[in-house]
Image (cartoon, rainbow, N blue to C red; front, side, top):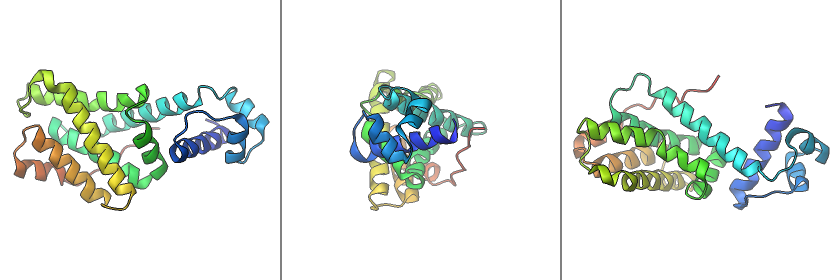
Amino acid sequence: MSAAETRIHEAALRIFAERGVTHLTVSELAEAAGVARGTVYNNLGPTDALFEDIAARLADEMHKRVVMSFVEVADPAQRLANGIRFFIRRAHEEPLWGRFVIRFAFGNQALQGMWTGPPAADLREGLEQKRYRIDPDQLSSALAMIAGATLSAMMLVLEGHRTWRAGGADAAEFVLRALGIAPREAKKIASTELPPLPRLS
């Protein structure tokens, strides 16, 4: 994206995250971005699809970065724990991103893909490897639990009740234990050093 387009998208993300709205006028967006209305028109055109575009971009970017981090991680339980903690750490590092995800994760189809992507694959692989003690037909319920635990921990971190390390480790440990991993192993997996989240080139 151009510098102007990036600035406009950042302003839109801030408004969506802070106000909880999904539609903006060109005037609102121009004022928030500190640019002329013509700049918004020239870089975006109509703003009708802006919310969906931003949600899709965020979901796709996070999905790709989490998948990239798994290249050398063979254990599906470790990948699942890392994925949960990546979300929680990023909410700490990028609060607007975190608040946007928390507000719209369950109601937006593109954002829902963040939970049905890598987490679903790791759950299926974990079931095949007998790492988890849930029935295959409980997969959708398990994914809902993972999303709920992750979003709740993100909120605790954003509200200052837990650090991202403690909140992330707790959420990952509780999820793994709920899936059938023994408590001691779940705690160990959830407490390993979290690598940097790869950046897209």
